[in-house]
Length: 377
Image (tube, rainbow, N blue to C red; front, side, top):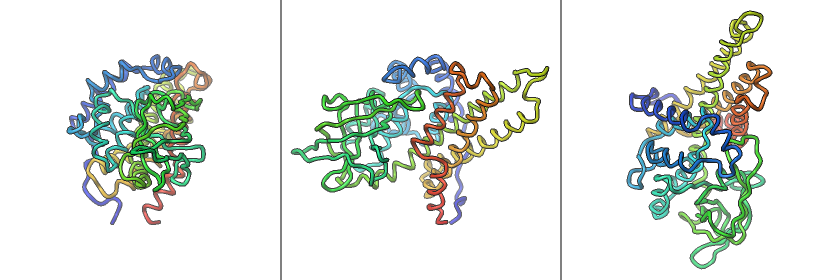
């Protein structure tokens, strides 16, 4: 079957366009650059009042959580709108950890009782949750050594996780650990006294990562014991597409910044955008952004409509968006010249986000290999 077969609606409808404008306006008003820089120095990394407002008034926390669990029941097209806006603003909100990672793990798993217990709090914005997956050697099933030892009806965890998104702020941690019957998913109370959570100094200060140490920490099994590898496979595509949508927003904002500066910066009596070298750079940037937009919109449509091509689309979106974000944010720095290299200018924040996302969630080269595998090439 051709990867282009099937009729999917790619363009946003009127409701989605209105939703995009509403989300963008909210983030511009409540999560501007000044607020982002303030939260960069905050260990928790987000403002609870802003998150509460985003959850209650915009319904962001429970956007694609079914209504039976207190969510809005929207599809991934709406998720893509929010993720692109977050990537554009670099807003410091626990949306990715809570609504993408944790909600996704629960929704894609096989434990109905866990969904009924945890999803209503996530949808209401009262529970900050995350998924603890990666360890020092990586995040593939063979790299995971955190051990889960049975203790009565529960388990206790011993070991550590790193690069846990919003790990210091999370009330609930969904942890992949190795038990007697293989890799399984466990729920851990974030307030447990046997947890040690340490902020990690990383390239991107707008996204908080933590190292979490488990020292005989009580945990409850979620789903069937030994079923985590299959869950990780399903969750991987959701994460990849979510990051691609974010990267599109980051690249798009960097392009706008570069073009605006090229129009207004005067050198030798002319706006620098009139010089051919700068024009060509801006065109190259625009081409990358539009390719990323086409790929991510197709990916969001395949997930929203349950297409069998969603895994291929997620890999393609990662390729295009990771390439675009890294290239465009670097070019944005160059077009801004000397001021683009300063801490005071926001250009470096977008470059940091693009690079760190590619390192944390997979580079374009890795996605190309995965795409070729899924295409059977």
